[in-house]
Length: 431
Image 1: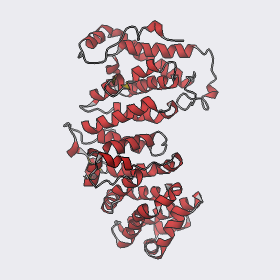
Image 2: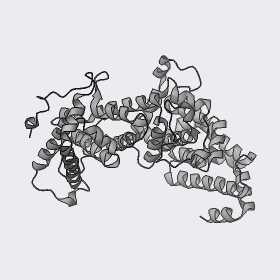
Image 3: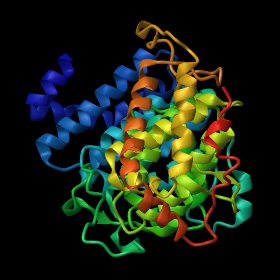
Image 4: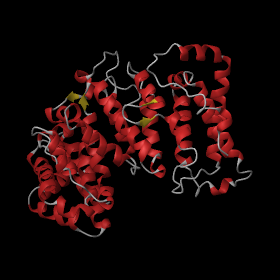
């Protein structure tokens, strides 16, 4: 704090410190930022480094001077040379790079020039980004342990932030008056840079599916960086059919297969993607709500029916995801009208699960959650009651338009998934 107080108000002290760290001080980066077994040491040093760089940029107005560039260059070189041997202590290292990127668009551009983006991707996956990416290259993918990947939250955030600094409009498959997802605010359109080759190669080339898989898997355990990752996936999906398809396919595959205790963040991501208002929104809604037989992926409504007994927590979270999305976006609710029988079945199933327990204590909700439970068995909670009330409200709105909704459903293409009246008999819900 004392050092920060001095360098914040004194340009001379700030310049001395950044010059020292770029010369003799470089030898301290590895032991104090990456090798120390003390988290406090690594955290304090990373904060000192961040304050040093941000104060100097504040005083000088630029990070392109030799001293700053020398420090950042050394950090990027450590990614290949030192980080692989110290993965379990690497979170503060990635935080330092992320903080530098967040100092502004010029700093993002500087990181791109230094090869940070492709170095981060290769570190994460083991696959070189700028070489010709054949299918066989994916077999070289690194396999990190769960304890190691927990250190990579800021690595994923750094990649996402760098992508968000780029202009995606030239790669959109559909025209729109908006250049960005209206809800995003990290980078105004006026601050966007032309997308570097390494970014477009990743997002729109053969390695896109690998990156998306890694990112969505990381989302399941993220907390602090989740919103940044979601914003990036939403922004690149906006008006881009190829990327949108890859994201939804991977997301729904994981939603169908991973433990139900890991679905909470995936639901948050799913809601945001469903609420993107662009020419592709109806395709997203159809894929997520109805599923696809070609990939063997259940939509959210089928997940309720197919998991009602074996994994009621998954079934409940599918209902809650649809309720949350409907409350945020009328287009989701409008699409549910096309599946009135399935939606009524899902609501009645939740009502039956709630009635199985006559009493629950709201005080237990802090330790009892259907989103975090590892038992796969639904529990009655205050949150579940709220979800049921909102689901019933949506159902009530359908009643007034029931005839119209059924007519619309009958007019859809014969190739669409049809309701098996026996499977979706409202009296067939197992208690």
